[in-house]
Length: 335
Image (cartoon, rainbow, N blue to C red; front, side, top):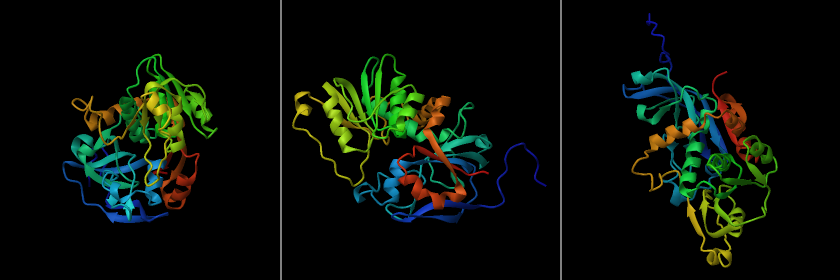
């Protein structure tokens, strides 16, 4: 008889199921046998994962250009781009076996949608005790938003516009609005995002927004039209941060007018690198741990737009990605 240690025990079965993308626009469930975890690894049973609609939609539809295949790899991705591939990076589960100090803990991991997985112990981050696991799926998005705010250099008193009220854009506006004295405007063409902005205490506008002379402008909309409007609204020597990733979609910008006269700066922000000004002190692990801490606010539950059972994901996944009202869609693994 197995002694009762009061901690979760490794399951007898080692068969895992994951969502695979075999070709553009198609998905299926696949099974794989897991090796038993070593002493420095962990076996994690998933409780929740989150669908990051923007990036996963590009991957699902085969819109990642070949030159970006390597940079677009995510940790623990299966297969390879473009296809077949299993993709995702917002996993929350409980450690069932492996590294002794982590057994029984709820953890976040950058891992695709899979009900059971084995990774190195250093790949998981324990959740803060007061963070609900169901909300922790936002950690990767919050980490991206934090990096964008760093890249943007938003300071107290700044007038800031954020284009795109998706998950990342809204989290950028949320973080920036907590900096003392800032004035934040969240801009999105979907009028339904007004309620989300109101819930988080952020001013909202439909495009084209009016006003101007802004200090910092962030485009997280995936729209070249929004980036063009950012140029129009930017004040003298303002900073524009392009946080969108367009895949294989070209973008045309009006650079012949105000852009030069106002000495504007356009810079990209990408979560794969910590900004140079912080790199000496901030590791990826420290940044992710801080992102988890920043999710303690109960109001952020509004970022979860809907929930699907893992058992239904193969059928529902294409529709989730195609729905423009999707924010972060949560996948539930336990009944």
